[in-house]
Image (cartoon, rainbow, N blue to C red; front, side, top):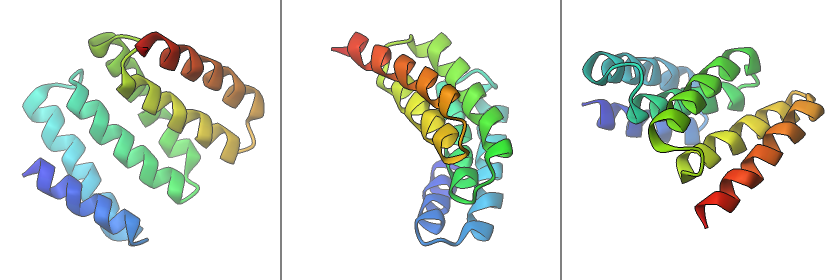
Amino acid sequence: MATSLNNLAILYKTLGRYTEAEPLLKRVVAIMEQALGSRHPNVAMAQQNLADLYCAQGRYAQAEPLYRRALAVREKTLGPGHPSVARVLESLAAMYRASNRIAEAEQIERRFAAARGRKR
């Protein structure tokens, strides 16, 4: 059920129907946390999807902690060189750039480059 809700929410986000996507993504996070525990990579994926939605709306203060939690879980469970870690770093850097936090964006971009280099 969570996968279907997630896919529908991503479709809504893509269509710009943010108010319909948000409750679905929040529900996905809750379902996955309850079923898998808060430190599971799938929960991190759901958190990143919700953070991506917030970024699309310019709600950076709400997106940042979700990206940070997703990053911590993925680094711990998958390792720092995993492609999923690189994707979170890339999204986090883009959020910092969009919110004019250039120094933080550059720091994360360096980590992103290092993570991409490790997976090769």
